[in-house]
Image (tube, rainbow, N blue to C red; front, side, top):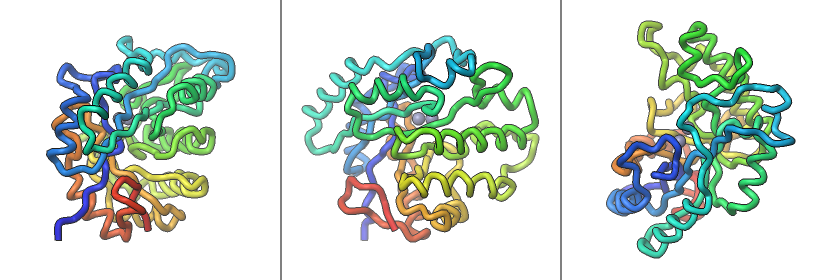
Length: 276
Ligand SMILES: [Zn+2]
Ligand SMILES: [Zn+2]
């Protein structure tokens, strides 16, 4: 029996500030259809660089400029491109959305943007944490402290994000800095941070939200999915985190096997999250 593939709920296009030259919403749609996915959510980066009243980052007076190339999502242009794709590919369910970075620090800015965009799918992400008076990117942190310390600080801030913002439905890449884990430190071991993972998972489950199985970095383990269930988690979302069209739906068959083995099944319809 051919297994049903889930929608890819985490895809970037040319509208993301970190898009490579080859990023393409149109070609991502074609790839999703070719891969047999029922739908795709275009969750381009929504990162802020200037604060407004009501943003915690302003109260803490943190320098938010991680990368000079960062710029705000052009929501109008993005939505027009998405509309065009919906016309061109009626057989594909296309969701609008965004991956909001550090939403707990940008509550007012994020709320204003979401209110006027009508996004279908919002991912919550943590790519940077407050350190040394600035919002510091995860890759920089490894140069400033031990790898263990990076992860512990990351998970502590991630818990603040989950508890401090309800603007997102899905928590993206729960252990993001793991992608940059220094090889010289030895293999990354989830169990070294079990208490930290579990604290984040409990907070996420308590708010009825969804854990992402991200297929860009190392794939989620059976053990982590067990921790999610034990924390009260009931749903997972699949996301390739593709920034190039050919990565849409990447490693989904592997991810589906892992998620099914943990007891989750396709949800109410083929566009839904997978649920217990
Ligand atoms: Zn991300
Ligand atoms: Zn992403």
